[in-house]
Image (cartoon, rainbow, N blue to C red; front, side, top):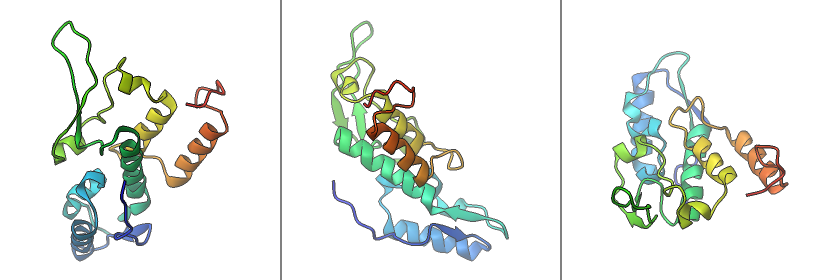
Length: 168
């Protein structure tokens, strides 16, 4: 997995005017990769502007980190992968196929492997749950970076979200 910090900048940006929104839209288009771009940045020019409006890039970074984590686990960004499914009455095989990323894939459900397949069983629910929370389409409900760090710390300490002490 190759990553860069070409879009590094402030954690939040004020969107007081239409010019601020257009500047963000231009920067996002130039400096981010669509496969790792948070939904709110897909069409940044559509963001609201006003005296109390701002864009929380910290939450957008959590989205990108969730995409990167998914990529590390499954070998492709979540929006460039399609899992093999079977015909009616037969079990899904979980074979991965690479597809072209598009807006509808990014705005759709997170494409985890089909339940019960070897690819599905490879990782526990804790890590998949973390990715789901990081890839929450609603930026106001998406985990913050400190929430992510806390969850990862608990997972590494052997305390799963269910309190079982099982680290997955």
